[in-house]
Image (spheres, rainbow, N blue to C red):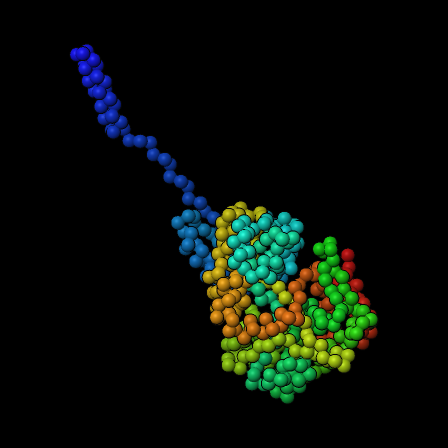
Length: 411
């Protein structure tokens, strides 16, 4: 019994000695984790630069504990984003804004991967915006705005509500006031307004690249020549001028333009220039072949994409989500007057009370989602520019229409 007790005491002594040694020896320390530096490039419209910088700053502040950021914002027009990006995908922006008609081509080229957590984005966005950001039911981009359409701005000091319902009254009032009604006839996007409700068609073929177009048709209730004659009649008015969107806004500010076709992106600037006289309404009807035809419009959305070749795809996706979040879209409406694609933001009282958004919704009944191939733009611009100048060459209208359609449908 004594031997067992002695052995036990010896064992306990050894154990206590080992414990004491262990307490004196500090445990090995884990090496400190290396802090990640995330470099991202963002492309957006030049007029959105200030807003994007503010959103990027708030993003960096939110995630400052997780990484160091080097985020650069560069101007790049949404309409030309696809062509620039596909020129060199690996050197392109990590996050970029673009018009929805480019989503199919970008996805097909491998520039966009399906959006992670697509269900959450789809559930938070307007259905039309989700459709515009999807290809064959798969979401490839983050909806940013649902307002990529156009309508009529007018200065109430010179026009009555009756004046702005028809092109004839609109031009007569502009002439009487010594001011201008403007519309960009160098852009096929706007020129579609004259053809869209005539029964004449344009659209994308099943190959997703080429167009069908019968704007030169001599059959049907309205022929292509009838539309061309109507455009020449409008162009002959001293109250009309074909002006780009930038020139429209410059004219609004200097007082020479008192009405014009544009979109919600100019709502804040127009309101600042015209104050309580700022009015907005759907496009007017115009006289064609002896009857009134409601002007049509293209509609669409602005989207934000994440480059599939980004070196930091997860952070790029987080930034795209941040830029298109409900809070960010509310701020975009407040600062830029752009209509949200986020359902909650779009339902806010501030958005619902906007005259520009109301005009866009009124015009939406006569709009079509823009789905056309790249060959539409230059031929239509050439034709419409000739009409805006009063057909200075004197060439046959039918011949010019035929040439336009040949270009639009080229393969």
